[in-house]
Image (cartoon, rainbow over all chains, first blue to last red; front, side, top):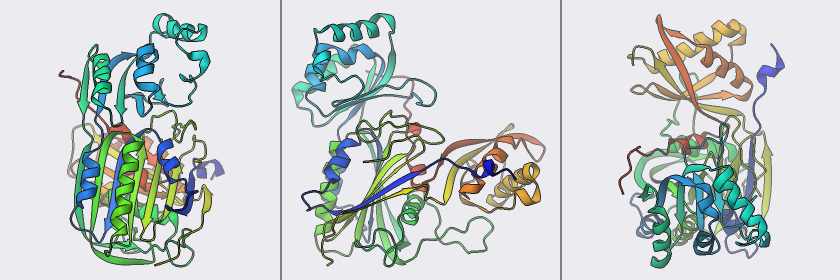
Length: 329
Length: 128
């Protein structure tokens, strides 16, 4: 049999271990650099009811807008740049454009291929005029866009609404749901053993188990079962209940950071919960993953990260990407 | 309580042993009643047709099966991904009825299958 048949696409998993209280901890940078987030999933073992502070954090997530047929040059208009781009916390991504088949547009309030904060692209300069007229006249690109802005004041909201009202648009709130899982096997994790050599299970098996929980896959199969032999990785223990919360939409990194702070506060309080997991899925069709690191779609467009928070404010951070991505930072 | 950790970082390249596939079976004449075992057996037959008994003799798991939508999640060793995917592509009939497998998502991380942004869909009609 040809050895070519046994090849498969490359995958990358970066695992970091640190402490939130460590002044050199990069957890805030990692969260802030992952700009386009589609789904967030939180798993809290030994927890039945949704804690109030975490519920508030989820419900405080900013709305996002779907605007149809927005010309790309509008994102370069001077008033738009002054009102939204330069103030930061604004994100836009073309909707329903598959990066492996067609053009994709993304707007970050930071360095990108067209650095809107660069002096040469200041409104009025020759380069700015050339780029603007190219997008208006020669290449009039129009796409459906997802837009979001974190914590907008009412004035900034009005400017955005005024722009959007020229086109068809809808406002959406991220969709939130939660439920309690009963009597599930749960991997044992010790903060000091991220590699899973002695006390914990190893990172790949842990992430696989997290996927199984999120997808409602049975973890209790016999080794000789015809259908599936998947089991919870060792070492494990049984928990009587665990809370699983998910939110989907177009979610800004600032919202993710607020949620992370609330989860840290929750686990700081005395309780049975040994650890909390926070998973953030990026958009498959985003042209960038962390910061301006290029993201692609070969067989899949995964770019996700997962925090495991422990009682002593230690954390693990797993960052996973696929074949056509730069290595996460 | 353990002492706070020092910083450590590990980079794993191609360390995932498995690939995971989210697939859907489409039948020409609409959905039939198919059990999880029949679903898996259909895939095994496809593998044997294409690669023979020896070529198809690698294990894969049907981690999850939705009988209403005829969708499933498969787990396969990396060395079997190409053979499994090609067999799914070329499978054309089930009980003398035309059918096709659609591969909806593939990833080396099962967790990635729970967050597919291409599923974010809105209605075509917008109201202002």
